[in-house]
Image (cartoon, rainbow, N blue to C red; front, side, top):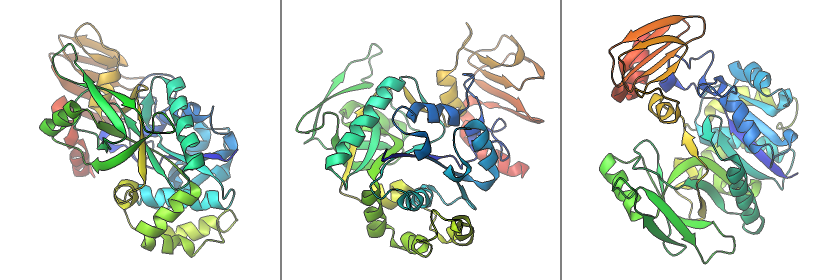
Length: 373
């Protein structure tokens, strides 16, 4: 009953434009065609280990009604509304102060709202390992590390401490060493290893080196810690942020909470939990995991997981595809499209907005839509 889950659901998901827009961002979309939105799938993934009353969703005020529509099992006071976007550290601090008003012995897992996990049983096993580790390591700050399957440039990496993990590589059939197997020892809790350092998103050559060396994991952005552990870390590494929240310490969990947040949240520094805490703390640990994870953050990552026709096209909607290859065609329900002669392209239409671009140029989408504004 002391296990809490913070779901971060305040982003716009602009890299998925035109499907994801300010008024209906991607966490509320069924982009994968599973019949469930990202945020609903995230809740269901954690519900076997977190009681319904211990879920908190931190989001933008404009999305509160959407959260309650997609997660009707939550009460309105479980949806914490940010008046402005200030990155992940203030988001987590807001939720931590709210939890502190309810349970000072809380164990907390923090997750984005828009990830894909295909093996939920294994995922829940890994989360339980993390909670078990925290029972005897109250000040540990943990993140879930994903065993890399390829030299990915879109993710940050975690370097494991070699004194904790013996790593050996398994050759893939294509000749590139692209899968890591970890044999953990010297740990009371099998699967937990010390973090040596965090690495930023690499270029391709560096990503290949990371995968070949074998003691690097993808940083999933899923975190576990005790309430006391994260509050101590905030006080040590982000004292300016803590000073803001301490002004309203007695307002959290009361009718005054939202008024305080509306007035003072914007004073928080705009900083991520990775930069602000995890990269500074010597007390960080990770659990190497393989549960079919992906950060569906781009059209390219969606394309990797989408069902494809015999020509490698991923189609959704009422589409006639003629002589296309390796192309995404995503058309909203109620419209029609004929697409001919494209290779390695992206075609997407929703709500009177059309995108046609080369898949390799998708990182420019955020820049392009600024031109529309």
